[in-house]
Length: 280
Image (cartoon, rainbow, N blue to C red; front, side, top):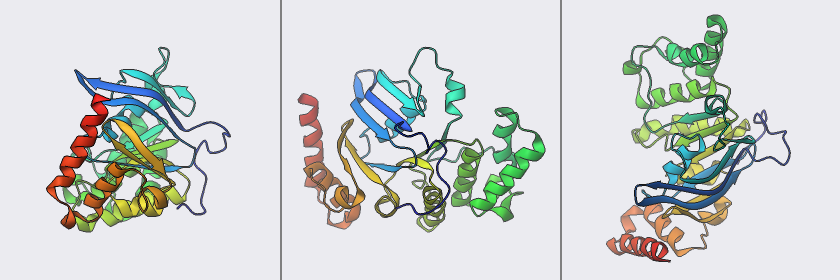
């Protein structure tokens, strides 16, 4: 859980959710990926979203900053209705930082240049200020000695930490993480999770799609389990991960926490649950 640190931007806005989703639906053709999701994240809260592949986790995240346009429903971030007809989506997105599975760094720019460029192009910051902020953030993520390195000279974990610094440089009020460690070798995962843990302790509002159950258990204020495009259950990590109420959650966690003990029938059972929900 989060400890002492600077509050999240917007944490003083009592009564307002940092992220509020109502009746969210998203279809790709005839495939309905999200089926009426209601969801919120409070200012300063860390919420981890878990679930099997294809459950709608990443689509939910991408709908939060309208990288995917919802089929129906509303998405509000820091009080701004991103689905409203009059919204300035570019201005709204500046409040939202996103870190993807892939690092998406510019290969021709150094670590410093990757963190500077959006500040210069989008926020119109003067170069000295942008470089000062970039250096401070690269030091914060443990890369003060890599400011002059190009992506090809960095490990996957280091590249992902540059991507986090780049997102933070825009001054976001909410950070979205879409399985940020899934593309990393196991020995590199800890450094990235350590940076994310530091952000949580400093009070950053975070919505994290992850398969890292230890991170969710230790850092999240709330864990949400999704399957079949709906939220099956949510609550404190001690309940959802350690004592889940729903059979689908238990089946998923048994495969994630002890994959060697999983049997083929477990997957069939999960598919059966999803089919039953679709027919309901």
